[in-house]
Structure formats: structure tokens, C-alpha cells
Image 1 (cartoon, helix red, strand yellow):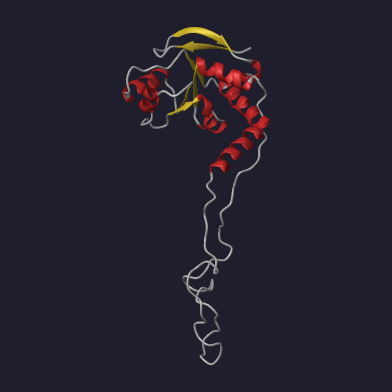
Image 2: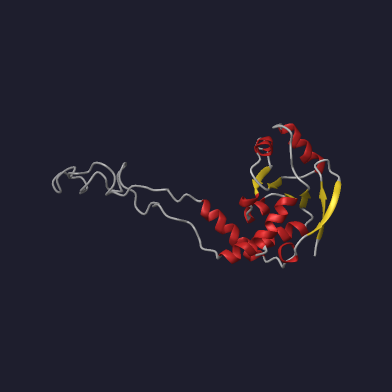
Length: 207
């Protein structure tokens, strides 16, 4: 059972806690992480790109000129794809890019991502993260104190003071525990959890 230090925001170790083996110490399979990251990115795509076919563009109700005798090429509509302003052939249509990944696989990938962060020594557990005021400078001081590089900070519930203090800092993201996901864990270099978040993760993933 892996053990980690718990820090206060002053950077002092206040205690040690044990993490569950079945969540923070499992075999990591890259193809599963890759599959779930693709699932998340595909889900974000709007799929609203659309062009008009010759049936949808306006105009072209009559034949521009007679079929024979003018010396010009025969044409039936000014909305032909060959003409400027005409319809588009085989253009994009609204579609869903979503791919299906079983819920069990998504949960497994989340455990793997957490395990990898712990193994890479890129996981920090805080006793709590409470600020007295909305002040970017105060949050920056905490980041610099721990020397976090591109941290993902996960808090147990809505906290406007923390969220607003961090939102203007480049390469820093504050996320509520219910939004924890594989892509963000892997995309950010350092994962910061509070004790309450660790308890929530173990309660949710340990079912």
C-alpha cells in the first residue's frame, strides 16, 4: 500500500497517509490511456461544420441560356458546383465524432493515470487549500513554494476564492473533484490533490 506525505500550504509535512493499492498502484497500459484520451477529445468536437449543396444554395431556378446555338458550354443552373457561388460537392455535414468506450475502461484509465503520477513523483497531497482572499499573488506563492510545473490542482468542491485566484495564472488549472479526468491528469505535469479529494477518489473508484 503506497504511502505519501501530506503537506500544509506552507510546505511543511503534517502527516502521512496510505493510498489504496487498487487505485494508486495498478499496472499501467498505455493503449487504454490512449483510447480514453481519444474518447475525451472526440467528445469535445462540435461536429457542426457544414457546406451547402447545389440543392441548398439560393438562385439557379432557370436555365442561364438556351442549350444550343450560343457557342457557349451547355449549363442548366448557375448553382452548379463548377460555378462561383455554386454548391459544394462532398463537403462536411453535421456529424457526431463521439466514440464509445465502456464505463469500466474509463474508470480503469483514471486509476492508471493516478498510478502513473504517483510513480513519477508528480503527485502532491495537501492537507487543505484555503485562501483568505481572492489574490493571484497568494496562489502564485504556493505554486512557487512547492516548485510545481504546470500543475493541475483538484479541490473537493466549489471554492470561488481559490478558483478566481488561479484563473489568470498561465499553465495552472484548478478543477473540482467531480471533473477529474484522464486527459487533464496526463496533460498537466503535476497533480495536486487535497486530502478530501483523495477520500472522494477512493470512495468513487473503489466501488
